[in-house]
Amino acid sequence: MKPANADDIKKREIRLIKIAQRELNMEDSAYRDLLWALARVKSATDLDWTGRKKVLDHFKACGFKVKSSPANKSANDAEYRKVRVLWTELHKLGAIAHDTDHAVRAYVERMTKKSDFAFVNSFQSQTVIESLKKWIARVEKKEKTNV
Image 1 (cartoon, helix red, strand yellow):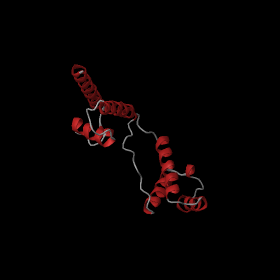
Image 2 (cartoon, one colour):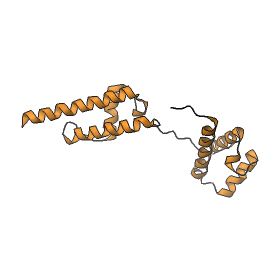
Image 3 (cartoon, one colour):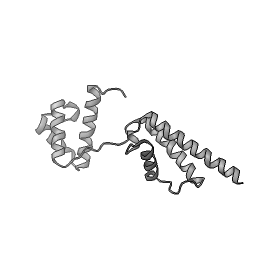
């Protein structure tokens, strides 16, 4: 992952300010007045680092909470979808009872000792994927011998 530069940080903070405005149900005129009172600007894009910090601190004091997404790693998005497809296949084969995200998370935690797939590195995710593939192969082989 590429380290964030100053422009990326500024864009992120401005997005947070806009999200806070929306979540706190702040009308545009009140929002503009707040920007003027705290930082002497009429637009969030005109805020410098200090001004963005003041505005975000004010919104946090008003009850805004920054929510982080647990699955920020885009590489794991495709890997998780692969795990989910394999898990569903196992369910269709009758090898597992529950085709839910909760069941997948429990399996991943047993395999990797990580509480969430977002914390799994590429090696661990590939290990999970390969174990599911082998499980499917064993179930399919067992079905063929039972027929």
